[in-house]
Length: 180
Image (tube, rainbow, N blue to C red):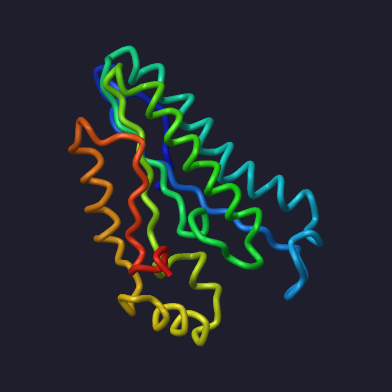
């Protein structure tokens, strides 16, 4: 889900789910993230954290002016729990969570809620690149041993869109991965 900031017909801004996925590429396998190329770190931060910031920044004037809006950032269990080899990705997603909470505190009195959804593994372009043995191993290790469906994520986003008093929250829909 990409979050664009164009107003809806009639000039009214609506909800803006925002999802960006970017992971570092150049760190040698099995090496600590201190060996990552700084440009890769910058790209991950630019894609995940700054992308969420710019999307919110573009949509908020419309939402604040009409005193209603919903921002749903899509984050990752990697922002909640340590993921070896994913330091930049984890840091960027944790940053989006912090930004979500801060924006919620700033905008709630003006009718704008800001929340984040943390879906677990789904079959997507990012997971399609992984070997099947890793994918099946990841699903087996979760307390609910399966991947999250796109429909489950959509229903969770709908929950945020339907609530007037839910703001600043990060909800995990990750088959229990974030409790491990």
